[in-house]
Image (cartoon, rainbow, N blue to C red; front, side):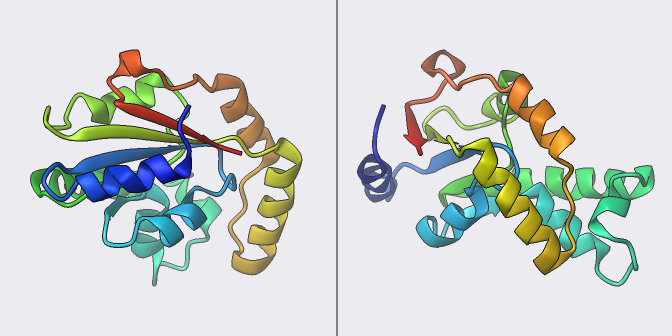
Length: 173
């Protein structure tokens, strides 16, 4: 287990070797907040950001977008384009999605150039704190994520391991 200092060392080393970092945790665990403060200059891959970007001007709520298959197809295509762009450069990449299962992380891991450093940062935020943050987010932004969805994600969580291909795994409490 490494601390945040180690991640900053990775970023320093990544002048010649790009780093891709998976942020791992359920909604409202602190991933995006961490990314905004600690990964400036990185290329960010965020499905939520794409949903927000593509729904502008549609009149759809955040929740509505998940019930619209044609909208989700547009999001999936935009996500694919974003992944290709991120992996084609030499800029550090941050994957700001839940990444809760081996399978979800593997989809991208298999596409990362071999010479890149691969880091997972796991957000071990207590469920009670996640619930508070979800309520606050809904009040402030209108984005509603049901606690039942979060609980399902928590139950499906598979701890990242080096056998998946990670060079480093960092746990944040």
